[in-house]
Image (cartoon, rainbow, N blue to C red; front, side):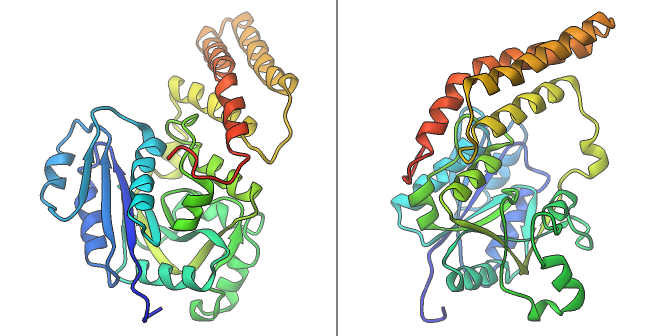
Length: 314
């Protein structure tokens, strides 16, 4: 790989990210391997954009509205295709990397060309512990041998990459051929669920997803306890998101009947709660059922669109 100069684009989406973004960009610009930065700001109302303009070399797109995670990333993916980059590195605003992170990811990707996504290990912001939700995805249930090898081997003696079916999109290193074949994120998803859907599409088309134990990022995300505090609107969003993720999955055979059964179950849950005079919880299920119903056509169009290998949504 030393003889080949790779063209790499790091894509970051910001939204009120002033707490983290300077550290994130500094870590990328301090990398051993050069990577351009394409950054989409989703109409932040804090001083994120003011901070970003201190970095004259980044490519900054200031959106006038919040496009959501997926559609904002799609702008960067489209730019990468147009400008013939070799790799893209999707990175969350609340992350930072080590000096060798991009270099190692590039090395692993060049050796393992069958992979459409390679993720580094996600540490929490204390830089001492694994990020909780990442740790659940590398359990033996989802990712064979990585934990066993980590215990019984030194990291240097572990495999370059371990396969799994899904990894969160906080840090995705992707060859441009993934974008050419699969495209961007599905607009059915505004925020959350878009990475599930993208991985489902890779699985359907037999493109591998992996984790390398030899590269790290640090992620200042919410702890498990904080994520358990779910407000009413978040409960509704979660029910609708589960519906979208399940029924937009092109690996599953679905029917109108199965979709309506899901919606009917929400309605029955709503009636049950209302009969128990729990009107707040009843309204959660009722609103969720309506949102699911109105998303039916978008999901069906999504399923048809994602069956073919092409740069969808770009």
